[in-house]
Length: 80
Ligand SMILES: [Zn+2]
Image 1 (cartoon, helix red, strand yellow):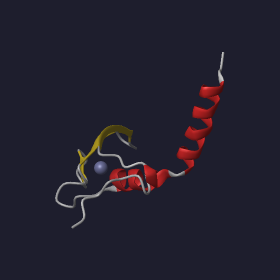
Image 2 (cartoon, protein in one colour; image 1 turned 90 degrees about the horizontal axis):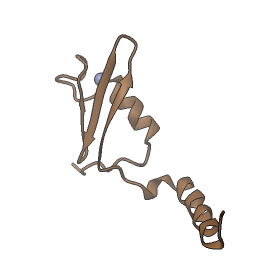
Image 3 (cartoon, helix red, strand yellow; image 1 turned 30 degrees about the horizontal axis):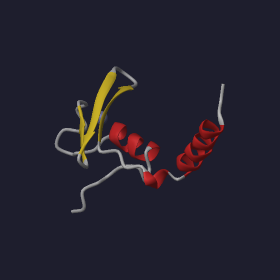
């Protein structure tokens, strides 16, 4: 049963969901189903980590780049 307050909240949530740049992910970890095996990608305070070979020494890979595309405008990078 939905009351008026809840209807208002849902309306606001839909509005917020359209305004992605309001959201800044601080940290998270993701299991990514890669072509050969799953990869574990994490993001913390503007820094990526991935357990794939390509990431080592480069600091980015197709997994982190894909997440940047998905989370466009929602990642809180530390300004260099
Ligand atoms: Zn990777």
